[in-house]
Amino acid sequence: MLTVLDLVGTFVFALSGAFKGVRNQLDWLGIAVLAVLTGVGGGLIRDVLLGDTPPAVFRDERFFLACLAGAVAVIVAARPIAARWNRVMVADALGLGLFAALGALKGAQAGLGPLGVVMMGSLTAVGGGVIRDVLVGERPAVLDRGFYATAAVIGSVLLVGLDALGAEVPVQIGVAAVATSALRFRAMLTSMHLPRPSPPDASL
Image (cartoon, rainbow, N blue to C red; front, side, top):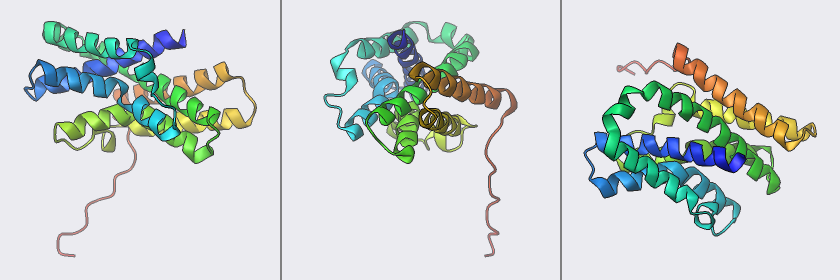
């Protein structure tokens, strides 16, 4: 079941990457590349850092196929998908929660300390989006988008706490994923974000 959800999350993330390619007027290959890197980039970074090679995405090609399916869907039906973008964003929030939880769990199972576990969860959730934005010359959205990376960090911290309390793995994943997704939903509805300092006076 987790693999199915992981594939669905990969597909949804790939959709966002493919749309970014369309908006930047890339050709079909460029769109496919962005879709793949957005869909599996976070997990790829995580596995390399953990020394889990070859990374999972190369051992199970269904993840690449899910990304390519997202790219094809956008190329063929960009307008209908854009018209339902709110639904895509809901799925994206669910994928964010699942990726953060699974990434943190993998870090915990690899024996990392609390900070390492939180980093693995956060990287898994937002790494692909960072790669996507850098490739098209934009400031990564996770640096200023309402509670996107922050939600992943909080969800990963929750998993660390539950693991320390001896909670069962399904409970750890469920609570961390739901909390992350719920925070992202709240941010989408209310424009919630962390405080932003005022820019310094130009005369200083």
